[in-house]
Amino acid sequence: MKIKSAEFIISNSDVAKCPNNKFPEYAFIGRSNVGKSSLINMLMQRKNLAKTSGRPGKTQLINHFLVNKNWYLVDLPGYGYARVSKSAKKVFQKFITQYFQKRQQLVLAFVLIDCRHEPQKVDLDFMQWMGENQIPFAIIFTKADKLKPNAIKRNVENYTNTMLETWEEMPPHFITSSSKGTGRDEVLAYIDSINNELPAH
Ligand code: GTP
Ligand code: MG
Image 1 (cartoon, rainbow, N blue to C red):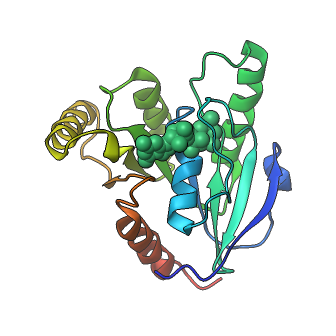
Image 2 (image 1 turned 180 degrees about the vertical axis):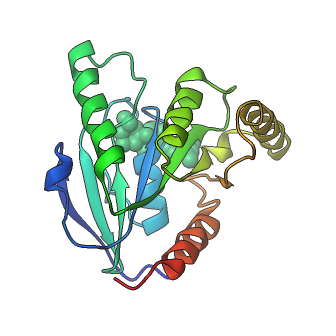
């Protein structure tokens, strides 16, 4: 899919105030610092469309970006970030939960996982919750530039085996590097294929 335009539309903490047209949207979720905002910039080939930082906790709101004037990418705050105060965490959790439970336009969430790490409970629990709430998701293993191909393969296999302890099948998954552009074509083609199956809006 060719990206002809990508524009920031609105940030907010209230799902009721998100854009109210019918365009399909794809949300990026995962632990703080996993690379959600960087991935959005990589997919759009724009350096500073979504704000990124080396320090976790950068994205604090629901951010809508309109792509090709007919679908949205949504950048969300991370979960599982210990240095945000407990009360801030609760507020994040509340609006993220509401976003996933209420947002009709949400077609699919990408759950981002750092490819270097062993499966973490917070991610597995989150995906379990997505399953229980019947929210479709795919997995993106990020920061592939940090590991050699063999190590990535081993970690993805390990992750798959862990998922298969509770899931019937491994969800669709992708391997990306925002610094190298790895996985860009695959993720965009996947979004395009879903957009093409949706009824006209
Ligand atoms: P929050 O908004 O805090 O939840 O974080 P986030 O998930 O949006 O992460 P962000 O995109 O801000 O990136 C966090 C850090 O990881 C930054 O220092 C990025 O430069 C770095 N980073 C993100 N993606 C990659 C990648 O593919 N490769 C490498 N080497 N670094 C990455
Ligand atoms: Mg972010």
